Length: 167
Image 1: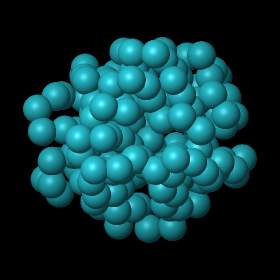
Image 2: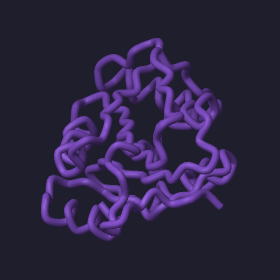
Image 3: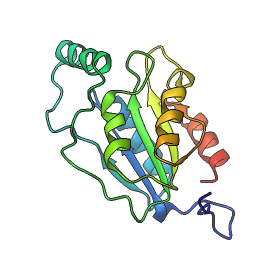
Image 4: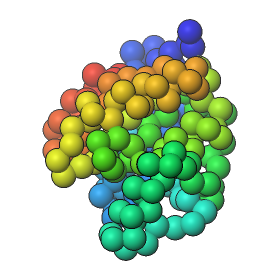
């Protein structure tokens, strides 16, 4: 079991915290920025596929093909997470699960022993529907995982969740 990076104050270290996010419309980017503002000293990393997604219609079609055919799209930027212990991973919920580009992160980045902290955005799906997939991905990467959070713009709820996590 990995050593938790919680300091003398009982809080997790912001310096050892990365906030990774994938966003097409900007909604998940807004969520990631809100978390980043709440954890000064954390690192914000946008995940970008090698082939960018297009407009809503083409993104929907591509995302569905990737899901049905279990395609893990290549990333343009591969983050080096060696110095981080706490890894937030944010995504829009597609078909009640994370987009396949999130699977790619678990395929290509060494997350062994890290703590994965999922957050999502969705107009109608709760985070609980994405959590089985996230738990499976974390287990296969030998990473720990916390409960996830569905960001809807409520700063009070976000701050409460972060406090529960030790931030």
